[in-house]
Picture (spheres, rainbow, N blue to C red):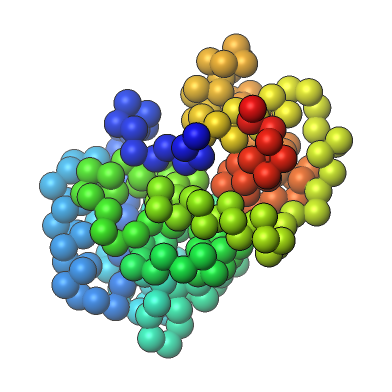
Length: 229
């Protein structure tokens, strides 16, 4: 079972306007390479670059991007610290960590701070584009190599949510089981025979009732309790 199937081209959300992207990374060569790759696709528009976390926070306010691609380990203000500062003022901002770190603790710290996703820098260009589109559409995206570490961390009891599953309605439990299978909102809507907007409401209710902060945590919570079977 693939918890977070972010690399399925047929599920990539098509948008009319280009997705505005801000790059935050202290490595100039890396930023230039990512910018070049993204600009080849008219679906993306790189609106700014920052070489450190504080400049990244400032540019978010000035440029209002749709998605921020943020390095994790930067001198001075780290990526996680910059992420926290961004979400204080712009809580709906989509921030994806793009890093070389495969450390489970780094993954957990980023997701707890509110990152919409965690991607590794060895990602293929096409996969990166698909991940950005899915995140911009409201989904959480995690590199396949990191999903097992995420589940292991939660099972080990690190920041495991203390939530009351009984608060969920039968329909919300069905939606949670679908999330555990890695289904997108569109796929869940088809399976439950409801509108996609209804699925979004179910997801928001689940987050609120279980005191979780992302679809990723919902999926992990469900898998831990074998709710997707």
